[in-house]
Image 1 (cartoon, rainbow, N blue to C red):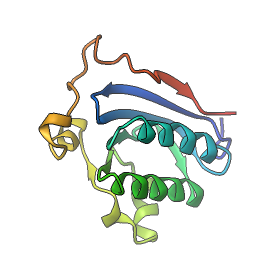
Image 2 (cartoon, rainbow, N blue to C red; image 1 turned 180 degrees about the vertical axis):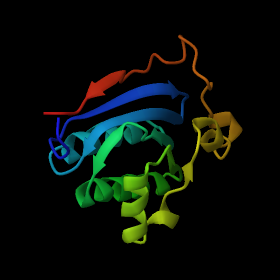
Image 3 (cartoon, rainbow, N blue to C red; image 1 turned 30 degrees about the vertical axis):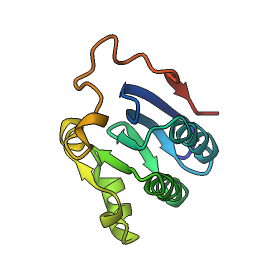
Image 4 (cartoon, rainbow, N blue to C red; image 1 turned 45 degrees about the vertical axis):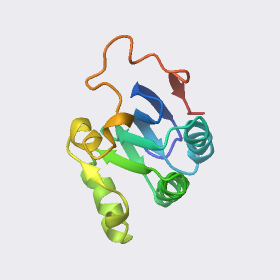
Length: 144
């Protein structure tokens, strides 16, 4: 699919009571913003205060996608918690730099490095085991 089609998949990789590691794949834009915010808003409502987003497979993110990330960051900071980005590609890095948002989103090379900033009592098992990957939300295709 070409960028901007709204196809987005959110996959739970690992979780604990207050932290989830999620893979975000596809496009984060106008077409997918409502489903992204619904899925991750539900995660925050379920008690996750720390969200680690592996964005390796995020193909496209425009200003609407950035607004989603900013809104999610705001929700988590009210808990208090944090939004941590992992494997941020050059396109998302450029978008964050162009908008002056780089300092708002801690980014890490690996999930393990991101989890080291989460309180130890809140960290999920990493790397995940077969038992640790079964989350209530599982995999969600947020696309059209």
